[in-house]
Image (cartoon, rainbow, N blue to C red):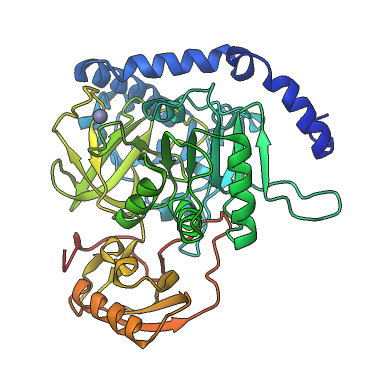
Length: 469
Ligand SMILES: [Zn+2]
């Protein structure tokens, strides 16, 4: 009935359901999974490794038996599935590229998972080339059935009893007269939904009113959307409409200036999350904020330099999720760069730490000689106060287009300052042309990438350079 019932009827039913206690709203199995996830994060490193290896053996056996791509690959490489017993053995399996996922899509589907139990998803394709993949339906449950996500919320002090607000890619049903609805409240999840698709002045005013009305203690969303909301409220002299205890960011790179702006405005800490639309990896900041804890009970993360695993130095992040049997992606090359650390976190959890350095997929400009320059070094907000939004686009090596939405008061002096800043940061390796525009479009998922990279970076030739910093 819920599928066709009008918005008002659904909302009414949700309010009734939302009055139920947490175990009934979320289901006992969800709470059980959360409890197990909490226990595992306090296991010793040896216990975690044993758990990981056991999950891995199960996955490899499944892949060989039921996934045609892996049967062919293992046979061709002479890999006996039973010989892959731990993370070290895993290195013998060649990594899977995004291109492999594209070209072997059908062969990567497990034959023993029924159609009704899997769900087809796609990435938003900021590089212009979306990817399709299958996830298991049980992982995409209606109520936030994700114990790993809730592990992160718990680290920030948030429980299913708390009211949260999100500023991300939710599509909110339109009104019956066809008018847009900017916010909606889900009483089951205790979640106020604000749409990252609309960050106009009118929309942000309505978000501020909704935040004031529902008083969420926790906010999560895309960094760029939270930055826009914060920047606007601050510029209008509006204090935080609700006392926020922690913020959670996801889906985009969190740039240092965004963290400073948002944390200062709300007077609390951001807990950043690193995942991928392909759902192969999960890592998150704990209350120590000393890096991202890899959820090693969810995935096996390696960093590769010249195709060999490295620790303590930067390499490409390659991840194997342990529980997606519908389409196992083993040693999936994320295209993101990171450093795995052996230093334990002061929080005492044995989930290893990963540092990203902002080097996420396609988040590099390519210099005239093929140097990779992390876009994180760009600090335009500090060069001038007169830029509303900005975005880089690169189609040619050594050249980039910078699109700017001006604020009132923008002058030639601002352009000079920006150009000066970029010359220093890019060490003369990228020539930047500036173009002015009225708006910068968000992607289909409401994201606002800082860089639209049209060059092929499928195989990163060098480690990223960070000139000027
Ligand atoms: Zn920690």
